[in-house]
Length: 206
Image (cartoon, rainbow, N blue to C red):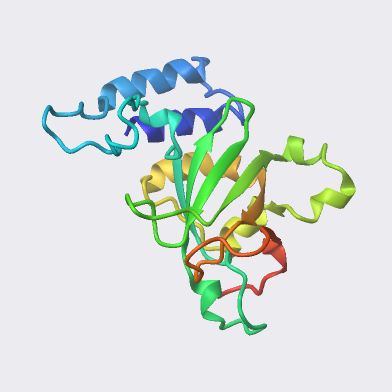
């Protein structure tokens, strides 16, 4: 899909262009053309937005939304106990991410998915290793290193093929993430104060 190819190009640009010497942007554009563009909206088809609440909605291309990359990962919810078997440690949290030109990502986090009526309960801000190294020392403890945590969180890329995931994984590994929640998954509404989850301090799963 076009969004997957755009993301692949963005991540590969973090670790250098391909050995062919062709600019990454051109490679992505060629691949996107080969795979085709998203299907156009069919007249009479149900809209994806509420026409009564937002009658002048502008239809944005997919690459402008939080669907550049879809990641699934466990060990992203604070457990209720200190047990390694706490069920919350096994809950898959869906990350729907947008890539930015400065090399950062922002991932909206959903405990169930990103269907029409699913609501995010937090987000993960992702930066490169070089950007992490510029942070104050006191701040660094809130960020987890993805070269370690991707495996510990059993992270997967459900919208990518195995080959596509293998291409972007080296770039993903050299990033750091900070997880922030404004709502607990069991609450109907956001209650109390937002909080940061220090992922690397949670029990490791088999």
